[in-house]
Length: 430
Image (cartoon, rainbow, N blue to C red; front, side, top):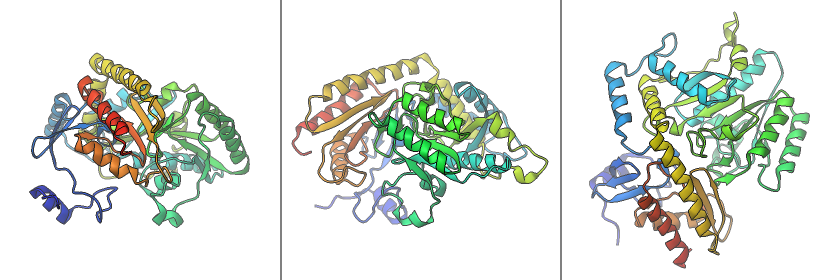
């Protein structure tokens, strides 16, 4: 029997094209009318636990009143102003708040609107840094299963996950190396050395400690330290894509905090405004910034967009940072890390799940599945529907299940998330 659609679903079907959605076979989207904390509410006031922080963005919980008040106050004072030739307090204050959390040598903040764009800007900085210094460099190095976003540069830098096949011949060439997973650290380092010896490389771009869309695959900080050290010795810039890993997702403020060797460029987005408004930043060292200073205007980084440094977005980010720094939020982060580790141990006896792993507040596991275990594995849709029918939003990456909740999620809500996963494992359906 065909599901009866609500008015909003019917209206949506007539006019909307949703992301990552094959509309020929997709079920109607769930109409969400409000949210609070870790909960989403549909038109019938049904509660759905947002166990993936709405695409990894929501760190502090939905509809946080402190953040809402900050945005409201900023909208009444200065909602937006051109950022070329002008400045404003929210942008400067946000930069001043962010930089002390970043690697010590970072001194400059460039504003944009999304994680993909932040990565584009980081790559452009690296290319033009050597161009301005009149040094020939042509190649970018990334990991095999990387994911860096949806714009063309970010797609080029991403691995072959099957998402960008239509654009393959239009992307620029990237040299990819194996990830330094446990057991292949030496191979990864050896391949990187060989690549640097045989190519004019301007930068090494990476997701620190774990790869998101590539399957929540995790690796050790020491292995990445070795790769960054190799790049430093070869005068190759390093770019950390912390769009997903930033703002305590790994347990520390940034994944780079676990590293001894620090990146030259850091890209931030998602949790920057706790998912409230589109805002991203790319930060860099003073050395990189100085390479763009010249009497010749052609040395300028010609990048920007209409909403660069948007004051309202900056106000939201400042409020989010202030909330993250509160002792209650810090206790919540530690609690979520502890609960995830406890559930990890509980999953070990199950035979139909493997490679259970945790990095900070993020817990991931692989459901055993037939066929290729990638993003397109058919198990994904079955699992997604199974969890959603039980009022839990988990969005599998193929056969990979991960839990990445807002830090305010209650113990009771976490218990329900864990319970539906165990129920799935015990059901015999998967």
